[in-house]
Image (cartoon, rainbow, N blue to C red; front, top):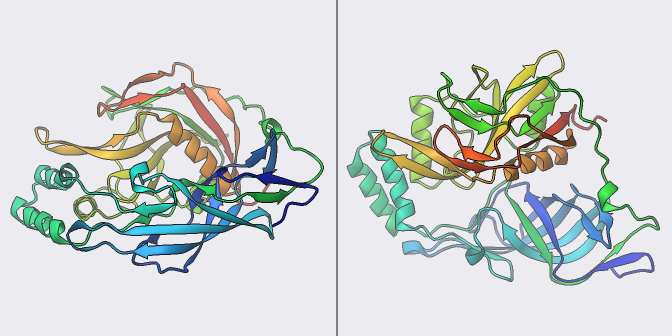
Length: 386
């Protein structure tokens, strides 16, 4: 779109955070496949918000190459061609992928081509270790791993819910009104309501060890909370059993996505979590998750602890494995704020210091964490209602 007298020209190189709404896999989704992503931040210019957050951008798959025999990696490329300014108002853009949550910079070219990740020998040993500590026969696992070495290399995959960024490769003119909406006042925060006192950390069943820090407070009914997470693409974990744990193990062996995998219990003031939600990553090693406890049934106040799994730790001496978390847990808290707001089912009230919060430490499984000691207070409502 040509820049008019009331247009702002954004230069090439401008980036915009996005979230994918559907899974795309190289070799499976063909060239020409259309897709839409949700924007997760506003476009700004000179301190003014010219395009709000939580609109959409459209694109098309321009390269889709499956993995090749003996480890040849797949490749995937998306070209973005349209950006939503407001309902039913779109502008033409030219943009490529700039970042992807689960794709390292070495596997994403400057031109926006994403490649399947290399599977290291250490990475392939993890599923074998999981099988060993769960008493699965090692000979079938070794045979399976040998087959894996000879099979096709990993495809490039972008999973639903994955965050990233797009980068304009050509300048784009954005028509704007006469008034400037300052970024600092684009969303006014309301006063935090008086909250009941609560503990700053979760714990184990008998309280011998401390768990994850509380970093979320939700204000809303159970049904509205469930609807908001469902609309964001998050699922409730299944109950742990021999069948569900075995399925998660084989998802790890085959490097597949573990959807709604079982989640371990944590306790708050002696109670196991009332509800939990998770968003699967590209394979069983990666997962976003949050546990919640109903603090006040009259005021419908929930407290929660959210962390992101980024790997697996195997302890053969104790016969168990556990996920490794990203120590920067504030990022997971802020992600949930963004994702719930993007559903139009919730609004951030403000960030509140948690009395007695630790700014660093380790949880019950020995995982280190770092935080600013604040909880995001989020008001959850019926989706679409204000």
